Image 1 (cartoon, rainbow, N blue to C red):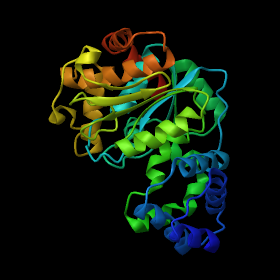
Image 2 (image 1 turned 90 degrees about the vertical axis):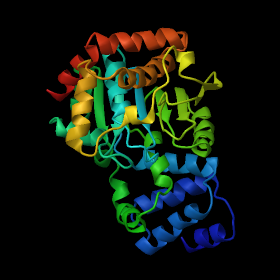
Image 3 (image 1 turned 180 degrees about the vertical axis):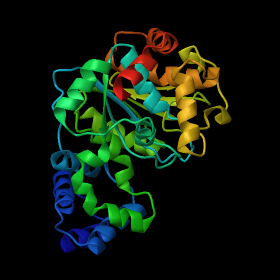
Image 4 (image 1 turned 90 degrees about the horizontal axis):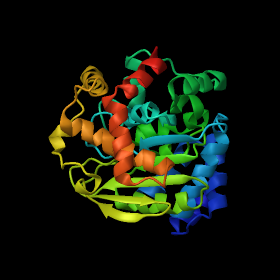
Length: 328
C-alpha cells in the first residue's frame, strides 16, 4: 500500500487492473485501517477516473457472494443515493411496478443514506426477511417477479471498510459503487446518479458492459427522474436532456416528493402509492421511472408506450400484488 499511496500523493492515476488489485487487497483484510483511510482520502481530494471506478467495480464483484439468475431477463433499478433530497422510496416502488408489468427485477439495495428510509428499511418494516440463498431468491423471482438483494449480505469484504467510512463521516467513492455491483448480474439496469460528474463516469463504465442500460440525473440534483424539471437520459442508444412534458407527464414540486421523517411515515406513503391512493405527483414520479425501466428492457418500445405500461401496472394494482407476493 505504501507504494500505491506515494504514487497517488504524486498525482498519479491507477490503471483498471491496479485499482482492482488494491481493492481486492482491502477487501481481503491485507491493509490497516489507517492505510485504508489514507487511500480513501486521496479520492476526497481528487476525482476518481473511469478506469479506477471500473477496476473497483470488478474487485467488489469478485469479492461478493454471487447469485446465478442467468435464466431470467432481469433488471435492477436503483440510485446512488447521496442527493440529500429525502424523497419517498421511488426506486423501490419502481421495482414493484416493473414486476407488476411482468418484468423480472433483481433489486440490489441497502439502508437509507440520504433519506430517512432506504429500500432495506422499507422491506424490513413490512416483515420481509433478507436472504442470500440462491434457491429462495429464485423462488421469490418466479413467484412475485422480484427478488431483493440486501447489500450487506452479499458484500462481506466491506466489513474491512465500514469502520473507516464511519469514522471519516464523509461521502467516499464507495457511495457511487453500490449500483454497479449487483451480485445478481442483471442484464438490464436503470440507475439514477446525483450529479453530472457521476453520470459521466457511469457512462464510461456501462459502455464497456454487455447489457441494456439507462442512466438518469435530474438537473436540479435528484438521483432519479423527479419530474421537478429537466433531466439527463443516457442509454445504449440515447444521450438526451428530457423534460416531464416529453414523457407526457406534468411537472411536480419538490415538496410533492417528500419521503417523511421516519420509517413509519415513509411506509405509509409507500403503501398509499401501491394502493393507488397516492397523489398525482407521487404516482407520476414512480410511473416515469418505471416507464424508463421498461424502455430499458424493451428498446423497441417508445418512451410514451413504456410509460403507459408502467401506469397500467400501478393503476391495476398488479404492482401491489407483486409486493404482497414478495413480502408474504
